[in-house]
Image: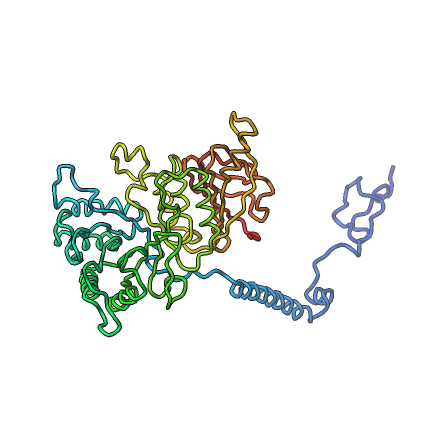
Length: 490
């Protein structure tokens, strides 16, 4: 049949947009949707500025950024001002006699058993490296002059100890090792056989001889002299004369000192200076921690002496010696006490060695002494920090001991404690002189931080962190703990 060619098909090119694309296609929808007017398209710059608030948006953004940085700088400045203006502890300028550890010895102890002379001074010189390893900075030499000569010749040492040249060499070697030398003149009858001076004559022969002798040793490089408060020569007049002489040799880098060894409970009164030695006349007043006693003091007696010294206010810079003797097992506790108290510790020959080392004639330093010496040298709180005595409240824990006996023992020898503080660093020093363990009461010293780290102990066996609420003091033990947390310490 002949028919129209366009019948039953879609004419090519009919309708807009369909030419060439729908030819011969049977899947083309009959209805074509119109284009969506709201379809997303990128905004032009003009449209973006109009939507963002117009051209003023750029200025507003710049001002906001500037305000942010100005506020940040202002807060930084306020923080710096607070840090700068906040009160901070300032390290005081300490004299060498306030920084150094003193070591007292008699050269005669090094004399050979066969009576060989001229060996003691050389033996002291040979031990200078050992003393330096202990942290010793000052050596006090006792018994250098003869006691049986009246008046004593202070320009000549005892010939049994060595020659004057050897002694001068010892002073030179000590300076090379960084150890100063102080001559102890205690127990010498300086005015024996001499007439005292009067107001018209001025210096007596004895005073003139003493002045000459002191000048001689100052020229040799001696750093100071010590005198006992029980000596006949000890007086305000003598100290004044010594002070005037020493001031001639004092320089900014080389200061000389006068020490007074306190033998009794208190220094004798001076009519002109008041109840104690004028601080301008002497630098150090050496005080004993224990009273003299013919027999070793018991734990209770040592505890009483310690508590008395801890609660006594110290008006001047003190220096400490053990003084008397304590019963066995308490020597290390006294060593910890001396090295942690405010002031200058003075160690006597042999006190740094344990009894077992002394019996075997060993010369290795006791580990506890080295630990304390290094700790004191590097910690500001132990050199010039504040001191606070802490009343102790503890709960006893006996080991195989009835409660009644344990309570009685604790009452007889209560623990002791004090705090050394500098800035935000606090050192807590605890002592248990009794034979029963003690656990700290949780309510004891509530203003203290609850924890810290062990620094040292008499047993040298405590390490790591510690909680004050759970630690236990063992019998005859002293412990040093460093507390890092800040807080209100009273």
